[in-house]
Image 1 (cartoon, rainbow, N blue to C red):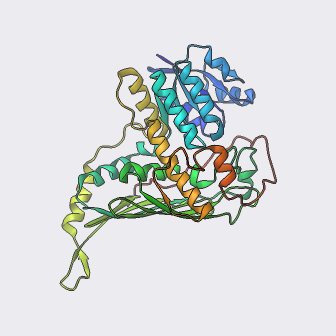
Image 2: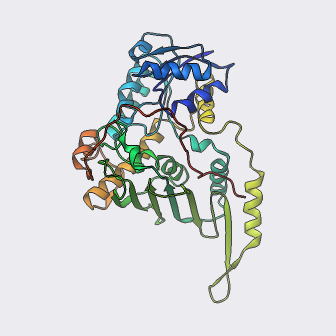
Image 3: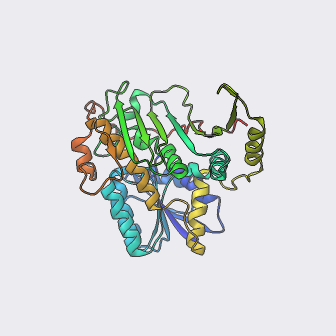
Length: 386
């Protein structure tokens, strides 16, 4: 029975708690930690946990805790993760993995040095439509992928950035490119690998209480000549999200949709129903994911600890995602075409470098210590419309 703690009792902590509670025979939550201990106690009471509420995470370093979920602001992730790993604890860290590539590298080095497990949250890999799409792409039935379109469309009100750590390059590390599109960018990299070049633009069109962007557009070139585009936004009403892959022979997407074409004698398209039916049959025949979202990632971590099996998402995956996001920020701030990979000599490699070089749109005007606990929305990007 693994002993588990959660650091950070904000909105996303509920997904972690509920995930652990799916496996009562394998793990038990023994502590919830938050700089506001009353918030930790509220979570304990909400879920009926037999756990302690603590205000200082350092108490966990002295205790026999096997696994910790870090659900705190991005700028704290590296310190917490490295100290916990050094104390002999496995770590799941919420997205984004950290607020700089330098911090990611320190976390990965601590993981290698200690031999403990480190997983960066990318829970949408563990959703049935996403798993099925990955398998369809891997089948090769579509031919070479020529273009990928990622729409990470979210909407947040002006007051969203009033929370003390949000909307600053120092503490949040960026806007929706980092903290919302991270899920879609992880999926893109999982399916396509990393691009070699990035050209990007960003702006702040609706949130003048934030330093960071509220919309960005990144254009990508891959080594094989394929192109891609990623739009990251918190100004899109409806929050309709999608990933579309255009292959030589067909297109598929999440939410699921399949279209395939043949060429007529003059080059115009006609439906290729035979290929559409093959792709649909492949998709329909793939299994459902047993544990979805955070529960799926927690199951993957528990299995890795119990059996030594590999993680689906490790520190290297988390870093790869942040590298592309950092490249988007660099290109959008400097106007440069950015080539990947980014080295440790790059001006955007460190958090201080990002703070100094990234475009500051506005000064933060409001800083609230806390919001009242409310339900958060997670978008509609993975609804299966088949």
